[in-house]
Amino acid sequence: MAHDIVIRGGEIVDGTGSEPVPGDLAIDGTNIAAVGRVDAPGRREIDAEGHLVTPGFVDLHTHLDAQIGWDPFLTPVSWHGVTSVLMGNCGVTFAPCRPSDKELLAGMMETVEDIPKYAILNGLAWDWEDYGGYLDSIERLAPAINVAGMVGHCAVRFYVMGERAVEEQASDDERETMADIVGRSIDAGAVGFSTNRYAPHVLPDGRSIPGTFADPEELVAIARAVGPRNALMQAVGAGPDVLDRIADTTAGRVLFSYGAGPEDDSGRERSDLFDRMRAGRDMTAISQVRGSGFMFGLQSRLPVQGATWDRLRDLDLPGRLAALEAAETRTALVREARAEGASRIPMDQVYYLGAGETPDYTVPAERHLAALADAAGEHWSETFLRLSLETGGRALFNLRMFNRNLKALGDLFRNEHIFPSLGDAGAHVSQIMDAGWSSFILSYWVREAGLYSVGEAVRRMTSGPARVMGLADRGVLRPGMRADVNVLDPDTVAERQPELVHDFPGGAPRYIQKAAGYRATLVNGQVSVADGEHTGARAGEVLRHAG
Image (cartoon, rainbow, N blue to C red; front, side, top):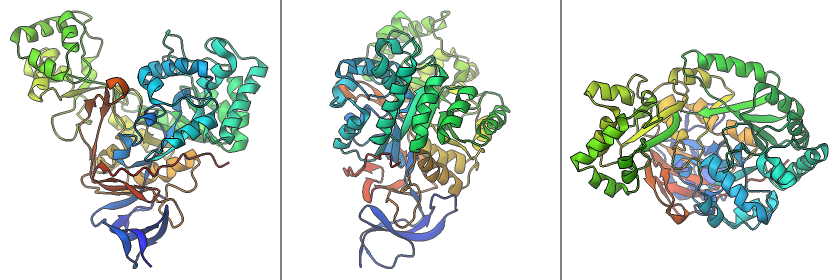
C-alpha cells in the first residue's frame, strides 16, 4: 500500500539527541507512518540522499503576533526549517483587549518590538476580546506553520487595572482577577504566561511597560494559576530572586532569556550561575546564537546625524547611490561624521558582514569597522561609504551589543539547559535580523566550531524546545508523531545575506533573510517549502495548550 509521501535515502536525525542513521521516512496524512526502511512506494517521493532528515525546528522566542495577520508564511523563520513558533513573548500580547484599548496595545508593541503601529492596527482583524478569541482569529488566518501563544502580563494588567497598570501596584483583588484571567486564557489554549521586567522596554510616552515593577507577589499569584495547569511561565528580565519565587510556586517549566558577557570567562561563570539557580527546578534559558544588537547600512538605517546625512536619509537606495556619486557630498558626509557626538554607535563593536552570498557573522573581534578604517588610512565613515559603494549599497554592518564574545557564548551553550535560539522573528524588524538562528547553529556551531554533534544540535532545536512549549506530538521523528520534517544538506546549509524590503502594510521596511541548503520543509505532512521557496501550502495549526 502506497504512502502519501516517502522521504527516501537520507540520514535520519530523530531529535532525541541520537546521531544520524541511514533510513527512510513515510508519511500518511498529517502523521509519520514509518521510520527506517520503507519498502512501500510513496505517491510523492523526496530524494534525501546526502541530506539530513530532521524534525521541524521549534522557535521559542518570536514576536510574530502581528506579522501573522498579513504574512501567513511567517518569513523569514519558515525559510530556515522552523515549523512551530511560540508567540506572546516578553509580556506583550494583543489579548485580552477591550476594543477601546487596541491602539494602546499596538503602540506598546511598536515601541517595545519595533513593529509599526499602522501595520498592527490595519493588518489584524481585532475581532476578539479574550485570549481564546485571539487564537480563534489567528486560526482563521490559516498560517503555513504551527503557532502557539502565551498570554502577556502587559495586556492582562491593563485589562484589569486600566491606566493604573503602568505605575501602580495591584490590590489583592486585582491580583486574583489577573490570575483568573491567565487561568482562563490557558484553558482557552494559551500555552503559558509571559512577563517582562526589563525597564528599557517602554510605552510610547517613555514609561516602562505595565508589570515591569510589579510586586513579585503578583507573579506568585499568577504562577498559582499557571502551575496546576502544567503551563509555561516565561519571565524576561527577571532577576534570580524573582525567578526562584516563580519557579518554586509554579513547580513547572520556567523560561527566560540569558547571555554571555564580553569577557572570555563570562560564559562559564554564567553557566555556573544558571546551574545554581536551576537546582531542583525546571528552568530553561535561551540566548542569541551570535553577536547581535543593531544592523545598519546604506540600504537601511544610517549611522550619523547631520544635515547631509539627513538629506541622504530621505532618499531611497537608488537615490542614495546617485547622491554619493558627487565627491562634494561624500566629503560633507565624512566631515559631519567626524564631528563630536555625530554618532553614538561604538565603531569598535561594529563588523562588516562581507560581500559574499553568506554573511560573515564570526569576524574576529579585532577586525571591527574602526580597525578596518585604521588599516586603510581612513575615517570609519569613509570605509563605510567605500564598502557601501563597492557593493551597490548592499553592505551591512552589525553592532554586537549582545553576545560579543563567541568563545564565552560557546561555553554558555555547553550547558544542556541553555538553548541557542532567541531569534526575535517579527520584532525589531528594521533593526536586526536574527531569525536565521537555526541555520547558523548548523553552519557555525556544528560545521565550523564543532561545539555540538549533529544529533545534539538537532535535539536543541526540536525535542528540547518542544518539551518547553508542552508539545507532546512534535519534535521527534517517530511513528504517530506529527509530520513536521526538514530535509537539508549539512554541508551547505547557511543564511543568505539580509536585505531590506518594504512589504509590511503601508510599505513599512523590514529585514528578510533567505536560507541555503534546505531541500524541503514539511508541516503537518504537506511540503511547505521546496528548495528554498514556499509552495503555497498553509497546513499550520494553532497549537493550543492540552493540559
